[in-house]
Amino acid sequence: MKKIKIGMMNIPRVGDSSNSICRIFRKYGFETRNLTRKQIRNNDMDAFDVLLCPGGHHVVLNPVEIQNIKTFIRRGRGFVGVCAGAHFIAHARLLNMRIKIIRAKGIYNMRLIKKHPVIRGFRTVPRSPENKGCNPVPHTNLGRIMIDRGNGGLMLAGKGADAIGTYDNDDEYAGIIVGNHGKGRVVAFSCHPQVEAEYKGNHTDERVHLLLKNAVSWCAKTTEASGS
Image (cartoon, rainbow, N blue to C red):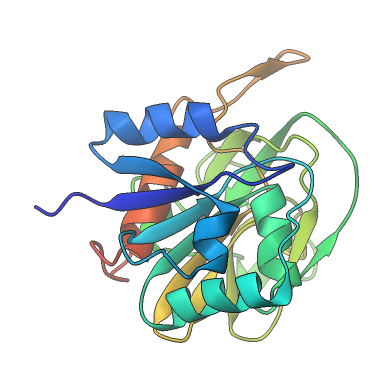
């Protein structure tokens, strides 16, 4: 099987979680290399199957660099954004989505609402249409995962983007959004699936790393959209 090659964006104010993410990918047999701003500017990304923008503060790229990333994806490659990377996805219009900034560091209960390869291995709890008016979400731990949100914004999916994990019972605020950009695939995590942590007595789900593996595999087109 071909080894998936991941370009880890290593640019100013980005990358504070890249080391922990790289350790996870090595465990799954993926290859990670630094991707510099110079490489992005020179459109030198052909060696990679997927680009990953890890957490940080703010992604600063000029219009030419953003266009080069868009072209990379449109031609059939992938892009995964974590926290600051999700903000970049919204800013660069890699997916039709918006970010609502609400600072609330901690571990959140996220509900997985649609079957998708990115959440393969997890249970889903879709909305129950018959109870939509009074109790839209069954009170069960099935289909829910405890995950570190850090200070990631709350994402709102627009047309063509698909929220597969949400923080609220109305399914408005997403923690995971997926979609296509041209021939390529994009995954936005407002949360930090690389983090195993405890916060005020709450613990992240021990399987959170699987979300990252699934996201990269789907973006690299080694798994197809056949459900989870």
